[in-house]
Amino acid sequence: IILIFMKQLVLFLLAVHFVIDINAQEHLWFAYPNSDTTLYGYKDAKGAVKVAPIFMVSAARFENVVSVVEGSDSKYASYYINRHGRKFGIDSLYFFDNAPDCESEGFIRFRNRKTDKVGIFNKNGNVTIPAIYSYLDKVKNGLVGGLIGATKKQDGEHYFLEGGTSVLLDSAGKTLINDFGDARHLNFYSLKISDQPDSDPDRINYRGVNGECYSFVDYEKEFKNWLNHLTQNFTSDLLKKNIFEEVTFANDNSDWTQVPGNQFVERNFGPLQKSLLQIRQSTC
Image 1: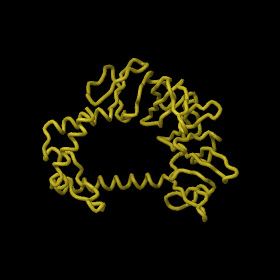
Image 2: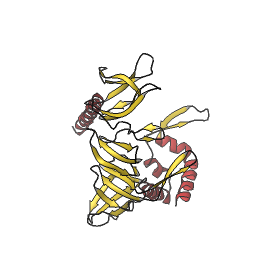
Image 3: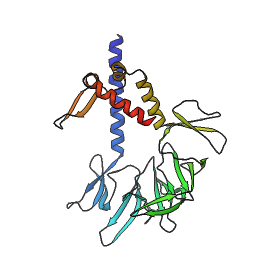
Image 4: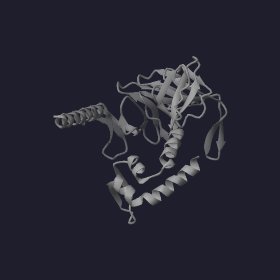
C-alpha cells in the first residue's frame, strides 16, 4: 500500500511540475525572424504573432519587458517595450559587453546618456530606482547591489569604476545596507533578517540601516567549508554521496560519455582525490 501511494505521489509531483513548466512556457513570447532573417519579432508559444519583425536587436524570449533596437543600419531607434506595447526609455538602453540588458524579476536597467548613471525600470515602464548610481546589479530576490559616487576610468579599450560607496537596495530604491562591499559571491536568495548575526559559517552578516542583521550565504565560504568537510576523511564512499547520479565527461577520444556517478568514482577515485586535495590546498 505504501509503495503504491509513493508511486502515485511521484506521478502527481511530476504532473504538477509538467503543468507548471507548460504554463510558464505559454506565458513567454519567442523571437522569430522575417523572411531574410534581418529583423525579428515575437510569437507566443502557439505561434501567434504578437509583435511584427521590426527589430534589429531583441532578446530571444519576451516575458514582461525587453530591450530592442528598431530600424536599419543607417537609421535606428533603441528603447524598451513591454507586453502591452508601451515604449519607454528611448535611447537609454543599458549595455554590458555590447549586449543590451535582459529583465530580471520584472525589472530592467537603463542608463541616462547625459549623466552616464544607471537606474531601473519596472515592467510597466516606471522608474523604480532613479539613474543616480554608477552601477546597479540585476534585481535578485527583490534586492539590488549598487555603487554610487564612483569615478569612471579607461584602461585601453575598457572602462572600469574606481571608488564610490557600495549599497544594497530593494527594488523600490530604498537603501537597506550602506558599505555593502563586494557582493559577487553572495547568494541573494538565501537572505535572512534577524536581530542578531547568524552564526552559520557559510554566511556573511551585515548591519542594515534599520539596525537589523542581514545575512547571506557566501558561495566561496560555502564551497570551502564543503570541500574541507569532504576531504577531512576522504573516502570513496563519501565522494559517492556527494556526486551526481549521472556524470557526463569527455573520454580519451574526445567523445562525450555518460555513466552513473558511483561508477565514475570507482574508476577515477585516485585522480579525483588528488585534484580535490590540490583545490583544497589552493583555496585555503
